[in-house]
Image (cartoon, rainbow, N blue to C red; front, side, top):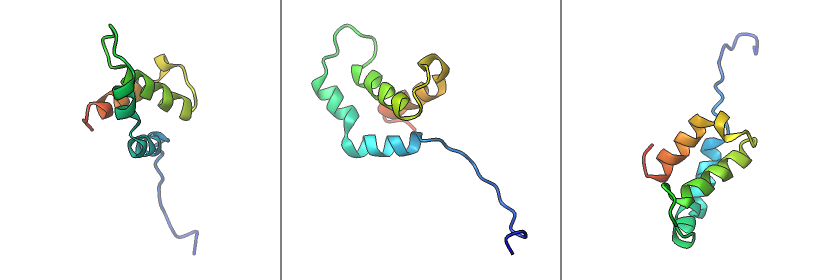
Length: 80
């Protein structure tokens, strides 16, 4: 019976799972509230969230994860 079933699989990575728990914990809002912005062009909360996602998703150099960085930045600004 198992030989008859045809199917496919798709890998989505760990980003949706990490994002879910970061949302549940309110990390972006927490960082935004307590970490001063200073003179940076972006919110430090974005950078911290990017670092967390990077560490939990395999700790790749960030220059290799431009797509992931874009996803986190869009998510932190409320876009999907």
